[in-house]
View 1 (cartoon, one colour):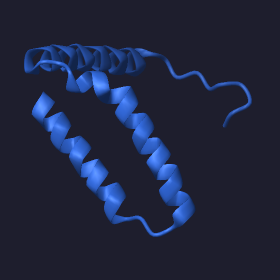
View 2 (cartoon, rainbow, N blue to C red; view 1 turned 90 degrees about the horizontal axis):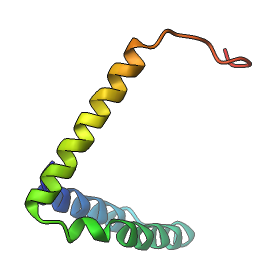
View 3 (cartoon, one colour; view 1 turned 90 degrees about the vertical axis):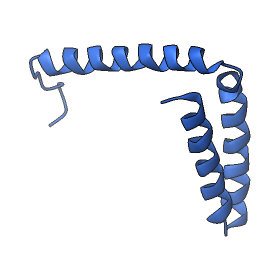
View 4 (cartoon, rainbow, N blue to C red; view 1 turned 180 degrees about the horizontal axis):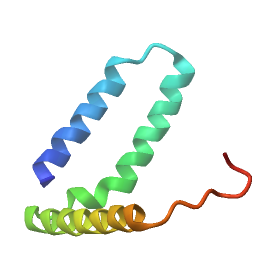
Length: 82
């Protein structure tokens, strides 16, 4: 995912939130969540295209390694869960 793709995705999420509002309490909660999301993700907006691509490449490699590790792990049920 490139920085431009990130920007498009974020804009789509914001648009969806705005379009589907009809309950005042949910609107207030969404406003709080949206503001929190903007604060938490502001650093991504400051990344250069190259930095974003490098970060996403590293994240993809990390996720692939996790998927491989989980796929290679023997299945042991957790006690108390069925």
